[in-house]
Amino acid sequence: MAYRAPSPELLARARAVLAEAPVVDGHNDLPWALREQVRYDLDACDIAADQSHRLHTDLPRLRAGGVGAQFWSVYVRTDLAGDHAVSATLEQIDVVRRLVDRHPGDLRLALTADDMEAARAEGRIASLMGAEGGHSIDCSLATLRALYALGVRYMTLTHNDNVPWADSATDTPEADGLTAFGEEVVREMNRLGMLVDLSHVSPDTMRDALRVSEAPVVFSHSSSRGVCDHPRNIPDDVLERLPANGGVAMATFVPKFVLPEAIAWTRRADANMADHGFHPLDTTPAAMACQRAFEEADPRPVATVATVADHLDRMREIAGVDHVGIGGDYDGTAFTPVGLEDVSGYPNLLAELLGRGWSEADLAKLTWHNAVRVLRDAEGAARAAQAVRGPSTATIDRLDG
Image 1 (cartoon, rainbow, N blue to C red):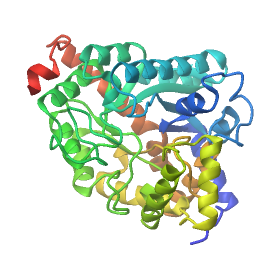
Image 2: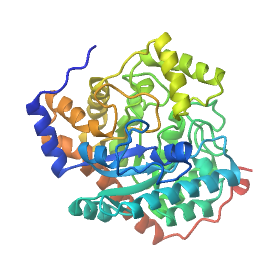
Image 3: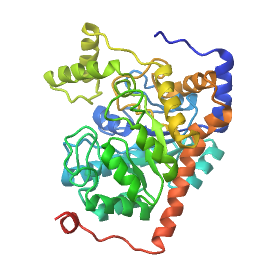
Image 4: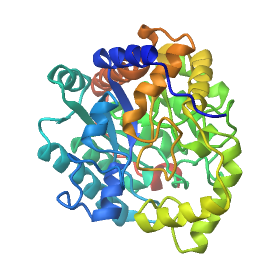
């Protein structure tokens, strides 16, 4: 289906919403892109200037998109393991802090919900951090606490591969969800006030985490499995449990997760990347040239703003408007939907939803209020947990044998 640009009236209404309730985006991989493209040389890639020739993200486009808070992913690939994963995660945290220090007029480091609100009042973009994958802590609760002390406010329990204590959505199940140590990781995250992120994990891991967690969870970048049957998406029964937990599911824009026709095409494209020596998630210029050449020979199915809106409609229908959000996954995917090509596209999504009958109040929950509330509730749960227990000294050897 061809994409129709929104009417000027709907776009104006969308921008009015964003002026009051800017987007809290749950996941952006700019730090990894900076690692891959310029090895963290911020002079070589200055996001104060237009970087549309190589990135989805820069400050002018964040402003144009109405972004008021961004969870920057401090992701590292799973082929980095043990101490190498930990040190690479620290490098990712370092570059986020350097970005904030470099652009104080636009970015503000945010560690709490109050910090997010203060940034909004100042007209700056609240910058939060999320670690993507439990391999980043190398099975160490002390390392988890260190990441929290450095500012990490969510951790995705797995990435594309299992960790010893939790199953991934895209790996062969080994733990049938969470192990005993995995449950302790969730409890320690609750005690700290670090959000438990259930994107990338298997449905059984989702269900175990919802059973164990004393605080609201997030899905930082996952869409509806009922609309697109991809293992990275959220099953309806899990969405049904979200209101009782208080959590938020943040719809992603990645075409292979939102458009059923794109799943098989992506498998072919990934195989082509491997044949040419590239990791499927590589978005460096050389890798993108490989992707574009493949796309010319084998045209890809194209997602649009309406495709993403279909997911949000389904997620809202099942979980309720208080439990939905947005997590674009920009700079972590080679392709994006038409109308959502980069971080400037959020007004197009809001205009599409307005045209489907979402109210301005509904959209304000989607963009800002739900995400701020979930972090604030996690902070409250942490205070309650800290009143009754101290830091966990559990080890995976002791709990899982």
